Length: 131
Image (cartoon, rainbow, N blue to C red; front, side):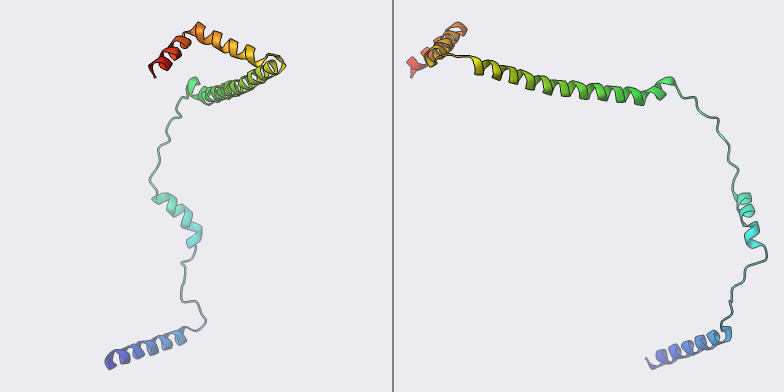
């Protein structure tokens, strides 16, 4: 262990002396005109690229986004109309029934006539007799 510490101390002392030798000067140097020639050298090292002929774009490919947009707008208008029409029908029925003057007895008579007409009255009567 003592040998390791001694080696480590020796290395640090060597580093200190080397740093003292360098001082404030810059130890790195770049060759003359390196950056002026840099782009040209890189371009020479790159492989040549073949320029491909532009592809012909069909009319359908150009029109496709507009067709999709038109379909979405038509769908949105259709959905909005469904909701708006359902609301107006509900409002019309509410207004109609709010103005109707009918007695409770007439209402029950109407329901009974509808049940007889549709055949449900017989089914309900049979169910009552079975129980």
